[in-house]
Image (cartoon, rainbow, N blue to C red; front, top):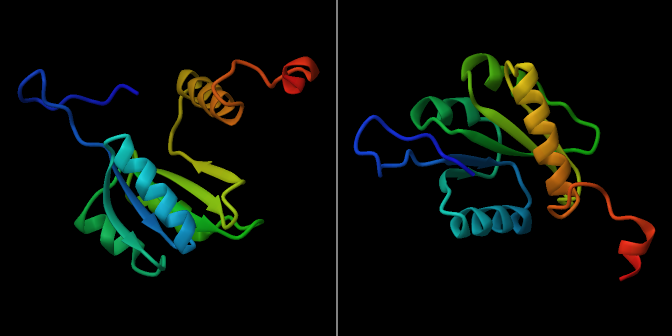
Length: 137
């Protein structure tokens, strides 16, 4: 993943920051461990979302990883996108198998790039879902 560079030295890379909120303990640990392996800075971890926006004002994040109920689209997602433009919200259902992305102001190119990236990620990096033969291997 290319990260934006700061205005300083060409080798200076802007840290990519995530804020984790309202996830079950095991899922929170998985997210923070994966972030550490990928050199992503976890700016803060909150067990509840009640103070989420206040924390974002103190420490902006590029992505908010938020625990969701299976059919929930929480109001806080809209509030975050309205108040913190450029922030992406990733919602994870408690079992970690379902994910929702909330992104502000995507143009057509960004929409297709995002959809392509999510599709590849959900199929293990392959361009398409496995065929019956691939699944048998």
